[in-house]
Structures are given as structure tokens and as C-alpha cells.
Image 1: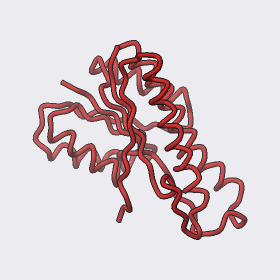
Image 2 (image 1 turned 45 degrees about the vertical axis):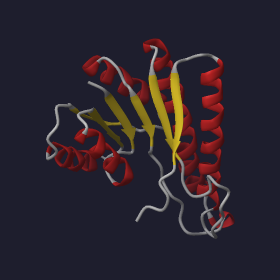
Image 3 (image 1 turned 90 degrees about the vertical axis):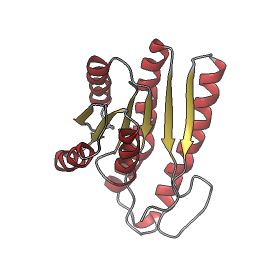
Image 4 (image 1 turned 180 degrees about the vertical axis):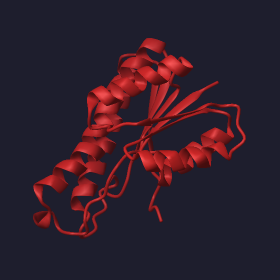
Length: 190
């Protein structure tokens, strides 16, 4: 049975993707920072008839040790991670960049960009060892160079995620890792 891990999957787009994987008998792994949201997501997934297991972990993807621990616990429980989707992200207040404080800027870059890079690095190491796997990074506004007043920092991080994903795919192919790298472009989430 295949296993999928989706970061930021206790609600929104991440949870909706997990539901689809559950419907297709995957082991599904909820990974989020909110314990309350994780509990609600697990209850929703349990309503779907499936042969797969549901695992859930409270993880801050900006902390490398927590991501390593997540990977190790999932491997211990189900043996392999077949698909990893970097979905976790935050938005910015609807303000121009010069009105954002350092804490807001750091938090967005740490989660949306550095979190994606950290998770990709760590799961890539695991997938190379298991000789298979797929990593997908979720793009967002700005990944196609679109601009909207008040989303400059978010757009910058998502454009960087696009470049990073393409570079990671190139490196994975050049090194014959047998790991597939891709992008998911969901469009506007309502």
C-alpha cells in the first residue's frame, strides 16, 4: 500500500488532497502545526472508507529536527513514503512590502520557502535510500510572475518555490536518483 505525506494538510487544499488519496486506498499522513485542526482532519478522513491507515503528526516544518522525526516515524509505521507534497504555507497581510514588519516577513519566508526547501532536502535523502518516490511542491500566486498589490512577499516566495522545484528536478535527474519532482498549481483557493 502506498503512503502520502502532505504538509499543511489539516485543512484547506492539503486536506482535500488527502481525502482523494484516502479514497484511493493510500496510507494518508496529516502533517500540520495545529493539534486542534489535526484532530478535526483525522475525523473527516475516518469518514472515508479506505484500506489505508491514517497517521497524524504535529510538526513545525521550519524545524529540521521535527521534520526528520516525522519522516522516521512514518517510515517506522508504514515502511516507505511514496509521495511527499510540500503544501504548508501562510499568506501575508494585504499590505505593500514596506508596511510589513520583520516578524511577518521572516515567518512567511521561513514557512513558504525555507520549509519547502528543508522538507524537500530531508525527504529526498530518504527517497534516494528507498530508490523511489515523488516530491511535489505547491505553487501559488506569483509563481507565474503575476503581481497583485499587497501580495509581493507571498508572490516572491512562490516564484522562488517554482525555481527551486525546477532546480531540484534537474538535480534529481542528473544524479539518476529515481525520484520524480513536480509542481502542483492549484489556482485561487476560495
